[in-house]
Image (cartoon, rainbow, N blue to C red; front, side, top):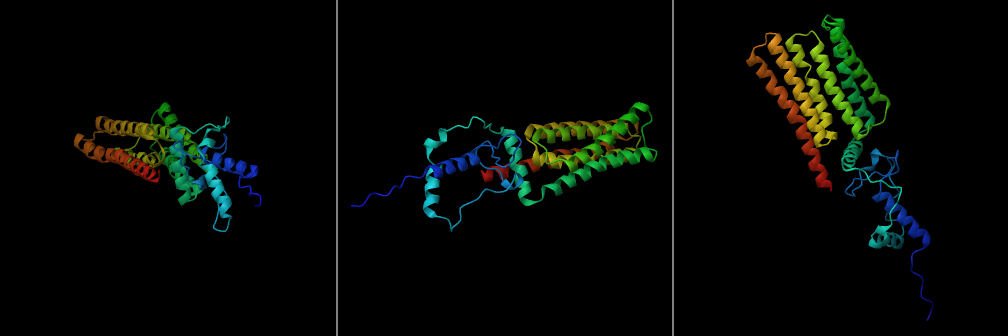
Length: 277
């Protein structure tokens, strides 16, 4: 009888399998996006964070692949913690998932350029108002109008020169943009029809918020935008001789867009994520 062949996996195979398992189950070190996973254990689409890992093909050794799978699925190996690993928060995990999904369909830079274009257009509107006689009538209000335009141009530049922002940076952009749109609108000396028309920027922000932000962040945007639109239309009704019926006819569809568009987008994205998981 010949000696029984040694079928135990080699030390190198065990180490390689554990390394691949940890890359799949654990987030990358701080500052790296090469191995992002969501909190519930599902890997985020990888194209947004770096090149894909090597994968096994039909031409690789089937025995080695089988042994690797057995080791990766071994529950006794799951208790080996990595002290330097810090799991993603639930909100951040959802955000990284949708950013990865977006990047798997289109170029991230193209999306950033589109956002920068619409952000800069807010500043262009405020600048044209000042140059063509619709600037604020007081020094303080004019400073608010100029500051709103400067913020819009700075935010557009930020989108152009930086990588895709983290969750709380994106939320800060939405909140500050809501405030800037409202401030530029209220400070300008514009006819009521023009003032109401500029509230469309809130709807554009809602597209971004509905896709990328979480529930309470989305509610914050809707509350800010709704309050601003109500204040703008209410101001025109009280001080610009706009009839109440006319104000209501304008206020209702604008508010519907501000609420419905981001809410529907958020519901759709959440349904897709639940389906993927």
